[in-house]
Length: 37
Image (cartoon, rainbow, N blue to C red; front, top):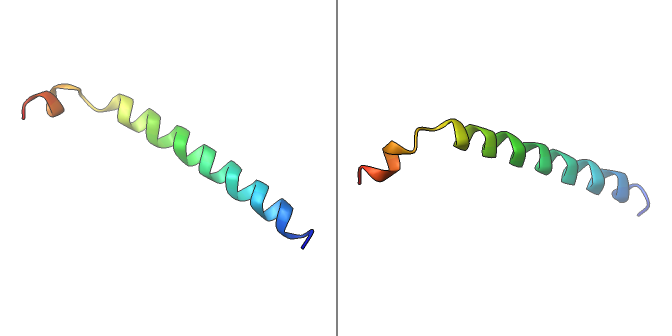
């Protein structure tokens, strides 16, 4: 079971990196697109 801990930490770090990437991508999107609706 001790092997699962590094896997969990690595998974969380990947999720955090993905979260940062998507938040940056969302910020680059023009806000006008969502306001046109």
